[in-house]
Length: 114
Length: 114
DNA sequence: CCTCCATATAACCAATTACTTATATAATAC
DNA sequence: GTATTATATAAGTAATTGGTTATATGGAGG
Image (cartoon, rainbow over all chains, first blue to last red; front, side, top):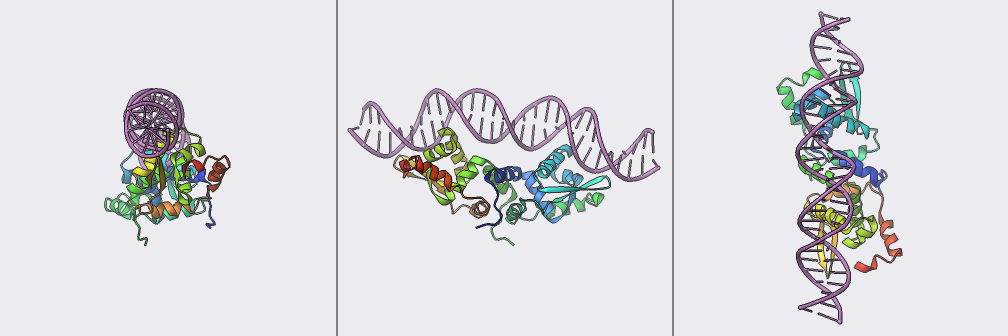
């Protein structure tokens, strides 16, 4: 028996949250590097509000957390989340998305926020 | 490194599929017992077409399979699915839903299909 | 063949979703 | 202070979703 049980309603919520390519990729990236909003804007080629709204949903369920650093807000995986073990289990099945960050670095767009 | 990698697009699809309370519960139930459509109708108190449509989505992505037995169609988890390992990992975090089937048996509604 | 039963499909609808643009907030630099 | 930059929120919209009812399909039994 698994020690980290999650009610079925909550699990459905988390899976719906992560059942979006953009948010899932965000979480996978955050699994290896903290990021700020502007980096995600570059990576996903969507508007800044769109990124902000995705991050808010992730934050609302406690999957990510934020920390202000100057004018930037750095997002990271919330390892204390009650969902962390499930999130981690899922991420293990996903190939690394680090190339997306490396592409940013090549363009010189990553240095801006850290 | 995990041997059973899944592309991020495919993973998002599967999570969206399972990010619905009804479908997730269906899959959890199928993890311990095969079921026919009419049983799910009783369990979820939704229409037969609604059940049928959920099962079709699950079948379309290969998460469940069907087998005709007389006039009934028996659904079961498709253990050969490329997603089986992920599905299994998720189900391990969920409490058993067997009570839903036991309730059916008490009402005498389960015997009809097997 | 016709009827009954289990299931699937079609057509429709209200709620939700993921984006957009426009605007507000908040910290930094001058 | 004002301007700039990063982020959040608001409002609007087209697409998707999960349900419904009505109808079609297909096997079982007379």
